[in-house]
Figure (cartoon, helix red, strand yellow):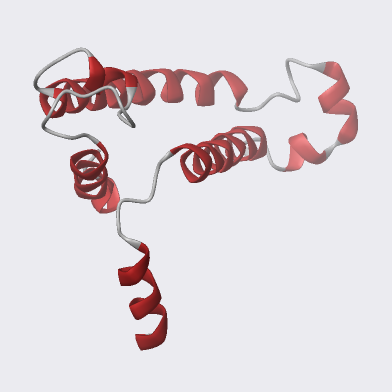
Length: 122
């Protein structure tokens, strides 16, 4: 989580999205069932990061050099020249889907007036 400063950004986003009070209106599911949603959210962040690091390394190793294992991909010739293209394409697709999911589901926490003033400055 500390690579490229992503851990700090995730902590800021979780702090903004979760609220310290336990109300069910407009709160994420994990924030509804506990009086301390920040603690639970940061716990899930650590677990998700660990699972992602382990499964990502395993999946990348499995997808590397697919031309020797899958005859259809070997016939294309592309994966013989670039044996690590498939893991790169896979992680790119996962990152794109994650960005779309965040864009669609995470609510905006700043008020609209602040956003409009910022657009005028920039």
